[in-house]
Length: 588
Image (cartoon, rainbow, N blue to C red):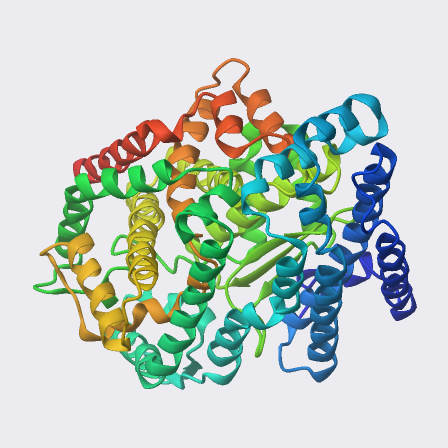
């Protein structure tokens, strides 16, 4: 594999000596931080010194952690990488333990004193946003002894995701699929989607069955691990004085339970639009029975539908041109300077993500499959990367760490711009229909499917919070019935579908997935305004990306004219979904 398609981790550390030096620096700075214990409320200078040290430590640990994680994700079976990854986990445990006194100690400082410190100390004003967030979070900060105990248990309590990842990404082997020409191709998480979008129905069915058979085999283990993760989350929420684990999650994103519940209610009230699309899928595929393994294939794809990574680069740059010269120039630079790891390999981390490394640059993980969906994934992840670029360029490390809610908007804007570019610039009517279909299906998978997942999470967490016991069969049945509700009567919900929840890694990041749905709702609004050249809007949007976490998520959105709590962006996104379905029907 060409090096230009792999990360250059030397941008983080040129040598092992540099890495080791930063380990030493972190230890030294943490010891220095201990000298301030018990003294933070005595003067504004002490509080400033605390935050100044925290900033330096955070910058170092973020580099160390990024290097170890990225190296591990390149090959999760490589012993050297596993050791470093575990070593960094230990370092983070030490960091959590030695900084655990800070929040409780600041919690004991009166709000009046904290505000007076900010007024009298110009240096401290650099951390005003962080301190005000701390004041706002006071009801959820516990006393020093309890925070210390929780800190000591942090790696244990956070192990459920690691267990799941190692089991499903490393230990699971799904066998192979025999292609039409007789060749055999390994079935992996990375290749699964390409099989599920294959025109050959037998291939789709075989891939669907083999993958879910493995999850069925281990469903009791996965269920126990997941419920333990949910219990940990609900117990933590209760300890920290939240009304629910959902409230804890949305407050972390500076969002609200109102947004979450509005999403579920509005999508549920308009689910007939999705049923209409299922009916259209069934018709286009010419099937008497639309199975779940039929729902991902694009029946309108013309030709091979192959897009290598170089093709993807070209079309993405053209599609994102409306975002301005700086944006596109940085895309060029990223493409040419190893910001991404492109292709699937054995023991490589599955899926895709962006990891912003403050003071260096973002890194993007892909498992590129040379298809149209992979092109969209590249655009999506570079949306995250450019968000990291703008926020890191304009904010300190604390305020650069934007919320996931805003992150999913930045990435999905790129997906919508790409899709609209492909549709509007395609002259071939058959290809145009294929692009419209792909956009509709992307909205389905992001707005509708992720809302299904969000409803599943809310049900499971609610039952655990009510001390209800859940067997693996009950969890599977809940998911199965949600699939029936969301897909409608034109879809046949295969028995294997009940195990599909078990392959969703995001469930180990509680209440994460709803942000995909709110993200595409906001992104449709933003992309439409950008393409319509609404005066001054692009500057507002880029400014939003540049502000990072300097304002709360809902406030950032209101600054560009989006009110998520009203539910209007979700309603408008569903109208856009319906409009595109009608647009396709007219062309057929």
